[in-house]
Structures are given as C-alpha cells and as structure tokens.
Image (cartoon, rainbow, N blue to C red; front, side, top):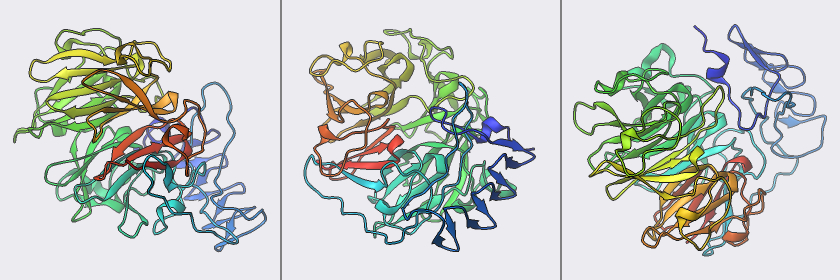
Length: 455
C-alpha cells in the first residue's frame, strides 16, 4: 500500500505546491516514473536552462540552481523536490572557514542555495536542504540531518560530505530488512524527515525518523540501520515493549545516565521514556496527552505541553538531559521547562509564555522566546537555546537565571562569513551543537547552511 500524500510530503511555511501523489508517482510537472517533466528532469538529464550531460545549457552560468514551484492558496502542500545538481562554468573554491574566536563563518552548505548535489564535495560546496540538527560523535565526526533531502550525512576527515542513510523520501529498506537486526545498509534505507541525533554510550548513532514515527539506530562500524523503537503512528505501548510502541512524530531524543531514552512525542504532547534495562519498557515521563499549559510544581506526567500538531506541522520542541534533570522546550508555550527526575516534579525555567523577543540581561523567567526548537549545554555550563522564530541563539546562566543573546541580530538574513557572533544573520535556526573545542555550530535551517562560531 502506498503511503498517503501527507506521509511523504511536507513543507516549512507552505513553500512548494502543484504536485500530487497518484499511484506511486508524482504528477503535474513533478516526477513521473522516476523522472521530472515539464522543463525539468527527463531521462537522467536536466534541460531548459539546467544541465544536460554534465553541462549547463540554455541559461546563465551559475551554481546551485534548484527547482521551485509557486505558492498558492492559504494551505499549500509541499512536494519534496529533487534539486538540480550544482554546476558552474568556472567554479570557484569556497573560502576557508577561519578559526577566530567569536567570528562566524559558513561551515557547511551554500547560503540560500537549497538542494542536493551529491556526495564527495567539500562541505562548503555541498548543497543542503534545510539542515535541522547536527551532533558530534565521540570520535569527533560531525553528523547532520539534511531534513528535506531525507538524509543522515557526515563530514569526513578530508572535509567532504558523505551520506550514510537515505535515498529519497520513504520508510525503510526493501523487504523490511531494517526492521530487525542486523538491519539493512544505510544507503538502502529511505527516510521521511529525520529530526534529531543522539549517541548511545556504545557509540551507536540513534536518530528520530519523524515522519516515519520510528526511532532508528545506525551502527557506524557496519553502516547498517535498524528500527529500535516504534511501529507506526499512534499512541500505544506504555507499560509494554518499546519496539511495538506507537509514536506520533517523535521529534527529539535525549539519553539519561542510566541508559534510558527520552523521546519527545510531538503530536501526542508527551515525552516518552524507554527504560535503560534489558526490558526496554515504554512509559510516559512528561505530559498527559492534551495540548495546553499546566502542571508547574506538580508531577511531570500530569502536566500539559504544547507542540505543533494539525495536518501539516513543523518539527516542534526539544529535549536535553543534564545533571539528573530533563529540560523540555515547550515550543508553543514559548517556555523551557525542567523535570527533576529524582522527584518527578516539573517547573518553568525560562519564558513568560508570550511569544516575542525580549528580556536579555534579565531573568529568563521574564523573557520572551518564540518557538524554541533546540537546547544544548555549553562548555561554559550555560543552557543554549535555538530561539528559532527570533532568528537567534540565546544562553541562560543556570546559576543566576540571566539570559542573553549570543548569536544573531534578531532579524532574518544571511550575513555570516567574517562577522562577529552578534552580527550574524540567521534564518530560523533549528539545531545547535558544540564540538570538543567548544565551538558552537548552528543549523541555520532556512539559509540551508551550518554556521560555526569558534569559542
């Protein structure tokens, strides 16, 4: 049975339209039988101002050309498009990413050029399509989720990009080989909008396959991928085995000290918990399953949370485990909440509940945030916040409670290379990570790039 259109297509801010999924094929100027027609991709060649046999024809010489469709109506539906490969008459190497403290640079991607131009290119010459999250493995390898290319990718020691998981939008490997150990080769596994990466103590990479409603594991040694939790959309499984549980768009992940895994179950308005023992039992740690704001001072599993839901939501919310506490970005409540896992009680640590951009230099409880979508603990012990719809990264001193903006101007833009952190212009950043040196990396999602700010 073919997946429904909603299961395989998605949009951020209603970008792409004019495509329908019919009998396993995209039509109306999009993809038919593996080909895109009406002036785009035909028989393995790009035509009409794009690329034919590796050469750019019928158009100006430029890099990173990509396909766009018009926006129509109040509720557009996105067709996930294959991008035209990046080509040029006289390609220039991307400038190096300078290592000056507090001075930003574009570390990966080409600013504003979204698409897919393959593997093997330098990270600054590689097209990305709304990168959503990134993380550094114990060996220092940078991994990132190329969200609208439906791929898990990494940066190799020589600086080039390689895809580890993902072919095109879909769910799993042929024959269901990824449903049980030892799994299937990552390049045989299709994904649908992966959203978060974490690493287990044994070095395995675990990621949320958001639109697949599953949690998958990649073995970096073998390259095999297997589903470890989840069996499709819904809400099932508390008190039973986690492998057969059901989630509804699991967005974020965090491991605790005892090996337990916390899963932000977005459209179920909960944070689920997989026990760290051999039983791997599923339960609910936070949220009672209804959208709202309530519960501070009481049991976390009786509180209300608010994330994007409805027919075509964006990825919403975030998790961070640190020091026996679980931090939750309660996105549509514009707050950051914390659960003391020893007592099970929940409280708000940041945000006044009013969407906006205010409060720097004051208590984070009095500050306004706007749709927080990632949380990281910095090398300085502060809580770093991707304040996505304010286009900034902010930091909260967990001792004093004071918040300040550390990256971004508060206005969407694209300026980054060679400017100070506060002069950087971001466009809806969804993800944050720190490397071993303490440098901050930002998934600058709507600029389709990753920005680095050395410590």
